[in-house]
Structure formats: structure tokens, C-alpha cells
Amino acid sequence: MKIRFVKNRPWTTWNRAFPRDLGSYANVNPEVDRPQRQTTEHRFGKFFPQRTLMFNGYADQVGQMYAGMDLTRGYQDI
Image 1: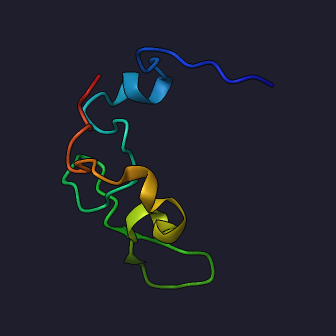
Image 2: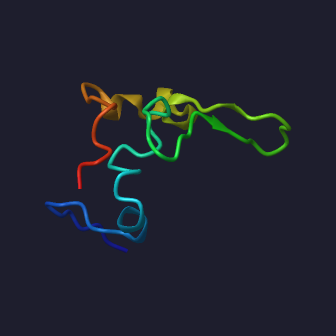
């Protein structure tokens, strides 16, 4: 296994198919208005949808990685 750092984000099947939907902060800020809204989600074992939490509920663990970033931007940055 290896990690390769690149200057530009590579194209994937998803961002080719939906270039204006997901950007580099995909699924981080559910309040950003975009074509595939993710303001609510269905959880296993729950009947009704619930509000999607910032950082998918992992704000305490990963929030510091996004400190100082404008999470309302970066969705059409390709």
C-alpha cells in the first residue's frame, strides 16, 4: 500500500458524472445547498430520517482538520 500526493485532485467517476455536485468538502457540511442535498439521512434501525450532523457526527474527532476553512466553498472547484 502507498500514498501518493498530487498537485491537482484526480478525476473520478463520480465527479465526472456530477461535476457540480460534490467537491473536495463533500459530505462535510450538510447545510450547503447543492443538487444532491444531504440535510437528512436514514440510519439503520430508525424509521424516520434524522438531520445529518456536521462532519457526519465526527466533529469532535475531525473538526480541527477543517479549522479556518470556508466549508461553504469548494463544491465546484474542479
